[in-house]
Image (cartoon, rainbow, N blue to C red; front, side):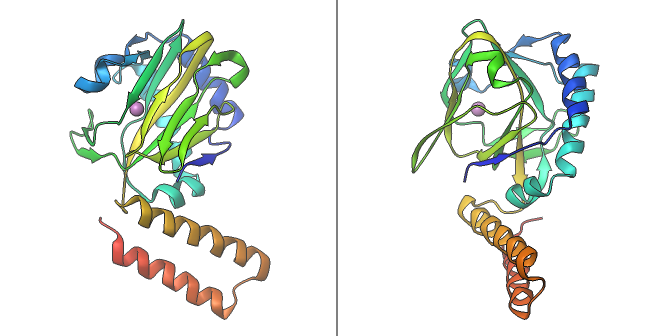
Length: 226
Ligand code: NI
């Protein structure tokens, strides 16, 4: 499942975040890459311990906490502290799959990467290229979203970022360990949750809807790892 989540950041958050990112001390993006991905990764990244990075992490985490679509799609158990990257002057990131487990630099906890997200801080018209290309069993998906919007996809996917040939592409990216490890099960729960919400909006709480809602929760209870 590849999902577009619009309006994750408010206009104020986006403006303040862009200000912090434009004045930030960027470093070589290979600081967090594994051996294979380091060979194909050409971008800039914000060192995680900088004050600006900490403030931006808190902003993104707060935005995620109030976003019901993110909750429904990711069913998050742990969110890795959001990272920030910048592509400019032809930078790109070739095909790779993200590392399966990562150590949270602040808590030391291991996070299994089940769900990947990219949250855009620059507008599509500010740069050329820079599409996120995600491969799944249905082929290639090309993603380039408005600033403040986010894409969510399974971390098991092969993906790349095309070269940025004009301007700069600035984004946040991070991984979530889900209560539901399996992509197919997580996708079923998401579809069911969305259908239940639409039915409730259209018809109110019918007896059938109570049964469907109970079934959703009982599946979640059966599958969730806490
Ligand atoms: Ni990646």
